Amino acid sequence: MNKEGLKYNTERDKLIISEYGRNIQIMIKHLMEIEDRNKRTEAAHFIVSVMAQMNPQVKESNDYIHKLWDHLYIISDYKLDVDSPFDPPKQGVIVDKPEHVGYQKHDIKQGHYGNYIKEIINKIKEIEEGPKRDALLLAVANQMKRDYLNWNRETVNDLLILDDLYKLSGETFAMPMETKLTSTNEILGRQQPIQQQQQSKKKKVKKQQIKKLPNPNRPTKK
Image 1: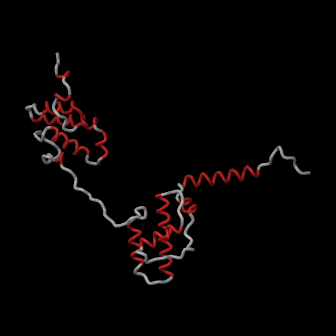
Image 2: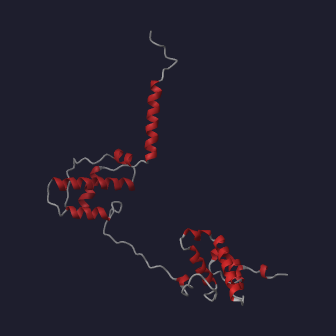
Image 3: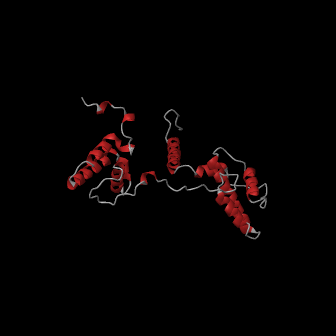
């Protein structure tokens, strides 16, 4: 009776790369016991082909064959000696951690506007007073309104945007309270998918066509 099949997984060797399962690990273990190098190399190529079938997501990368051979060496505890098409990986590569990317730290309270808006406002400070600076401030205020509506798609008061612009500029730019920004409906309308816009146009055309059709229930004029 084969008692190996009755063992619990906790009693067996730990899986080195769990994606390939225990059978692949057992096959590689037997591979290490093949004395003839040519036969061992032939068996290694066969196991790599099986690994490709058991872990198809590896194929999404361009160098997936190279990765499979690396995994083969790693599962063998870097002890495999065959004629591989690639150089063996460095020992311990499986536990290497990528470098920490880090987080950008910007002193900005209204995160929905982004740091670029604040940088643009600082650039506008370098421009002399006049129509050019006023036009840029209006463009920035409209962009801030778009960014706000991307974060909160309900509605926003123009005075709130102007007040946020005043705060982001370090209380430098106080635009007139009567300043009119792009309407909320117009901004949200521009953000609708093209497919929805085309469908709405088709509905309007159909309604117009239906209105032009004669109504059989309506008496004709003599």
